[in-house]
Image 1 (cartoon, rainbow, N blue to C red):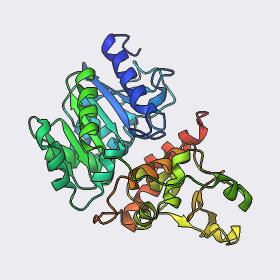
Image 2: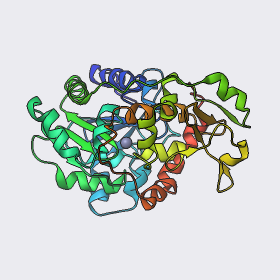
Image 3: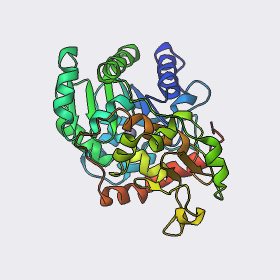
Length: 349
Ligand SMILES: [Zn+2]
């Protein structure tokens, strides 16, 4: 049975609040956890933080054997299914988050990991550490920056190596934010302070031309659902940044590597890449299309791209994922499972 106490209720409330805000979390991204009595309750893979108060999205795992597996590079640490505390589980069919080991190695009762837009817009910069120092220096927070490492066990091992006493904020290069504390209230407060310190006003952009997008009648495509998602196509600076490549893991997972562009006067079949339709199609100056076969959550990631690129100085040097880093995400078994759950999920907004 999931604990029916105030701290667990607070975790669900915080998870739902962060999950509902597209500037903090998108789709099935992000995850939260609570440790107690040797058990860590962690968000299940493929579930949405936004649903934390409506359904059972937490899976209990035994901490000690999981930590031992991480330390010994035991491959079972990756999916963590062998460490589920079955006697406590209420979500028998679900697997722990792909980022379970990341939460496990952080020796604090509460850990929150989100794909915060303001954080990510800085975490992709080549000079991320200097910018963070400027913005977070006066906050008194114990922050560290970790350049991009594949999520899951490789990232958890890097975090374990880099954690210092007093660390309560980790900025993950080309990925997002991790915060940790002794209580849910304190963790939520730290997360809010980091976002506030890193937030900038996004560049304004013209809206998408929805009727022009509909008039294209390209089979399988519909205009991106969220109004602001079209800014990737209508703001030259956003488009120039997006053209440089994949900025963070969930982009490649939901939308494929980088972006695919097609001029409005091109034929619809020009949109195929390696025989597959592009999940997201940018029509410069017009707007963004999303393919009907894209995973639930693709629209949220299309919005995130416009939100992140709209906060990056077009002259800044940025890092993008290498082709090898994209491939290791696309063919990662734990990630394929997360996509399967996302596809089966009835949650589509
Ligand atoms: Zn993540």
